Amino acid sequence: MGDPEDSSLVARRLGELQRLTVASPAYIERQGEPANLDDLRQHVAVQYFSNRTGRVKDMNFVVDRISTTVKMQGTLAVNDAETYVMCGVQGAGIIQAPQFMLLPHLRSGTLVEVLPQWKTRPIP
Image (tube, rainbow, N blue to C red; front, side, top):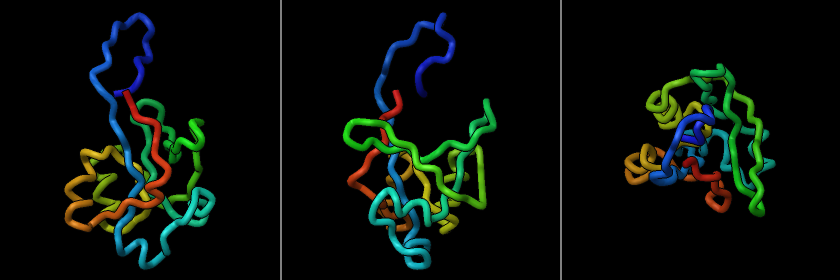
């Protein structure tokens, strides 16, 4: 996923991956639901860090066609996508994960989309 980092590689786009911003009902009951992007600064995120760089990935949104990052505080950071989603399900904080991984949890009600009016930039 993503743009090739090695410019000598030849890549062909197969599609785009959409991510959603979600939280568990228990988290929302305990912390409240953010109403806008500025509210996220008072919330807790489960942070996801890159295996390659070790850096925490900030929340990303498209606002007026411009990519905007939001740095959130977090007390937990993981580097496994399934663990990341399960931390969100358990109420550890807000997460931003691929839609296909979240759909079963959204359908069952164990996760709820927050700030649906602001989407992420799709990942090629």
